[in-house]
Image (cartoon, rainbow, N blue to C red):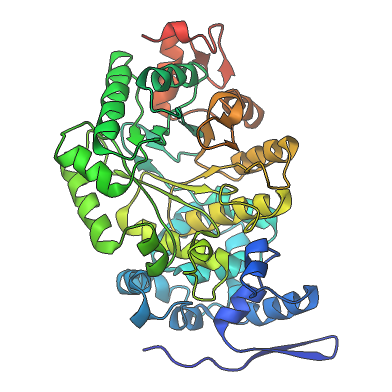
Length: 459
C-alpha cells in the first residue's frame, strides 16, 4: 500500500537542501527541541529548518497518509490509525497540501463543527505536520475553535468553561491526607474534571482503598465530578474486577509507538480489555470512561521513537487515544525533563502544540502546565502559560496545594490559580460543578464567594 516518496528538496539562498524521507522533513521542520537534538534528528540550523518547512508545505495529506513515520507492518498504532480512519472525512481533505490545510484551519469560515467532522479523517502525521507550520497564536486560534464535548458525571469541553483536576497526592498514600487535600481543592472551586490521585504504592488494595474513600467523600457532599487513581491499568483492572471498588475513570499513560507502549507495559489488546471492563462496570453516568496522559519525549526516553521527532510521536499517542473515546487526555508537558524540553519557550510551545494536535484529532485535551526543578523555566513563565492555555480553549489544568507536588517533586498549577484564570478569562467550571459551587456558597459564577477556600463547607 505504501509507496516510495518523491524527491523532497528546496533551494534556500542558493543552497539545495535534500531530505531522504517525509519523516526527515517532519523532524527538521520542527521548532527547536532539546529532545530532537538529543536524538540527532533536528535541523542543523535555522536555514535548513526553513527549507524543511518549505518542502513540508507542499506535501499533500494523501502523501502523509501513505508515509507514516513508523510503517504499518511494524507498529500496531499505525495499524489502528489506518484501519479505523474515516474514509469519507479523509476524502474531503486528501487533496490539500499541508500549507493549504494551515490556511483552511485559520480561515474564519472554518467552524468548530466542520473541524469536528473532519477530525476522524486526519492521521496524527497530518496534525503534526500542520502544527510545524503554525505560530503559537495560530495554534491557540485553531485550538480554541476545536470544541470537543464529553460526559461522565459532569460535562467537559463546553465553550466558556475551564475545568481542573484536583491532584491530592500523598507520599505515603495516607488516605486522610489525600482527603484533606481534596477538600481544600474543592473549596477553591477546583476538581470538576477529576479528583485524580497519583499513588505512591501501585497495588490493587491501595488503589481500591483510595477510590472508596474518595467515592464516599464525593457522595456525602454530592459533588458532581469523577474520581480516579492513576495506578497501572493492570492494577486498576484488579481493583475493579476482583475487589469491586467504585471507579469513575480508568487511567493509563500512553506513548506514540508500539515499542514505547510496550515499555509502559501496555498494548492495544490490554487497553481494549480495560475499556470493555469500564463500559460494563464504571460508576460514572456518562459514556466516556477513560483517562490518558502523554508527554513529548516519552518514546525517545525508552529508545522507541524510530528516528521520528517528538512532536510527531506525541500526535501518534493522540491517534491511539481516540480509539477509546476518552473523557480526559492530559499532556504532562514539562514533566519528563529538560533533556526533551529544555526551557520555558520550549515547554510553552510544546503545550500549545499538544493541545492543538489533540483537539484537532477530536480529543478533550487538558494540560499539566509544569516543569521539573532542573529545567530552565520560572514561575512567571509558568503562570503566563496557564493563561495562554486557558485562552486557547484548553479543557482543564491541574490544581494542587501551592502548585508544588510533594510526592512527584515538580511545579504545576495551584488551587488558587484556577479561579484566578477563570476570572481573568471570564470562564466557569462545568455546568454541573458550577451549580454545586453556587449551592454550597463556595463561588458565585466565575468570582469567588464569601466562603471561597473554606473547607468547612465540606463534610
